[in-house]
Amino acid sequence: MTRVRVTAPRSAARPAVDSREAAQESEVGQVFVRSLIRSQLRLGIVVAAGFLLILVAFPLLLGLVPGLAALRIAGIPFDWLLLGAGIYPVMGISAWLYIRSAARNESRYRDLTEDKG
Image (cartoon, rainbow, N blue to C red; front, side, top):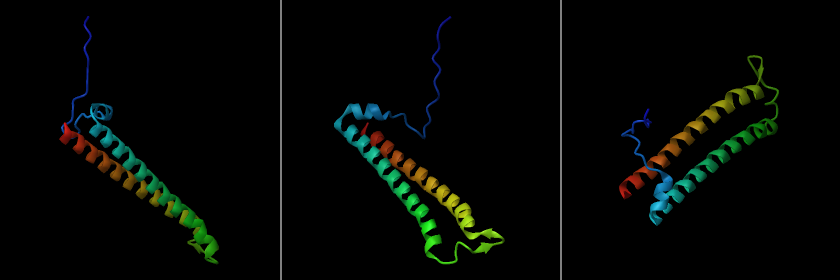
């Protein structure tokens, strides 16, 4: 019995460029990889800082505005509504923006490495 190697078909939308190979080929490849890593790190820090800022702003809002914590809407405390209905959409939007921006960064990297080679 002979061995058969089975591989997934290559997609035309996603060229097969290995970042390690691009980095090892030349100094230009190393610059491209470092640039991608820096841009992804910067994006992660910005999204995390923005989310933490909003997360800290909610309790500050409740503490600084008198009577806001005692407010009830439809029998539900306002602070619960703010945390329950306010945090989850912010998390979802942050995640969506992060994924969209990270994919754009990787697409730019693939375009650069594709033009180079």
